[in-house]
Length: 392
Image (cartoon, rainbow, N blue to C red; front, side, top):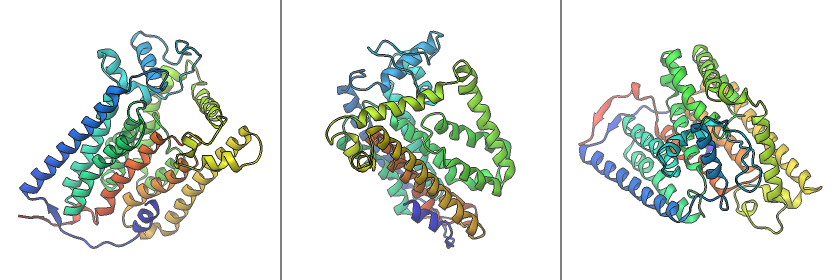
């Protein structure tokens, strides 16, 4: 999908009329949206009702609870947690746990916050499809597909929503992708205001699960070529948000938080690789980690290190290939948004494909990113250049 998007970004498109849905179709799409959201609420509630937040099942949500409780009590959230029966050094970046502060303050299930953020991103995407006047089949597909994905994931996986908050991360990346889908509006707007808005959505991802980190230089370079003032403004706002949300309140007190987090993930991954037998996430078909575990030479630590090296090499190569193609053919670029989303998707294929512990829940982000990409696939020309008509 990433390859198709990158190549399609250079193709000339024929202008079409902007199609405004008839009133009956808007009502019907609204009913489908409400019904789909209701079904997702039912499936989500069914799962979290039977899966408690329990350290014996997963340490993700218990860690978030401890960090938020410490925040409310004025304690340092990143101190070592000793209440789990073992010492755990919190590694989550601020946007992985701070969004759940209301749940800690008002004593309700944190998982509903994760669901709400995903729902906001989904509704925003559906509204964008309506606003842009996409074709009828495009609007129906974009309306139905996220709910279909959600329900199939809940039906086909084990406790993906009950034990993790990854659906929130998917929501963050969907919101960021929606900004990329309207990049021309950012390039034409006020650099200061648009830079702040873009930085806000970028930081949601950067300070939660920063999977797109190696791709960001390409994004910055492309925006720099198109509008240097916007690139500088966005970078300045990002720096300000990071200082405000992470560096000043937390990192200054313990500068090793980030590096301890990387070390923790490697130690946890090695423990998973050393489990006997061919069971678990390495053999769920979500990545190549199982191949490296079985076929790479050396002890288990060397095999894991080999995968980590190849993840870096493959991810950088993916970004480099997209950068080379963009630079050579930038004069022929027709849809910048489609190239940005396509290059991100192409990069994710390697970053997540070579990830050291390919848990199923980690794949929610690239999965739902694909749905947002459909907006730019179906948007054949800038709506500002099209003539609006109404279909009766």
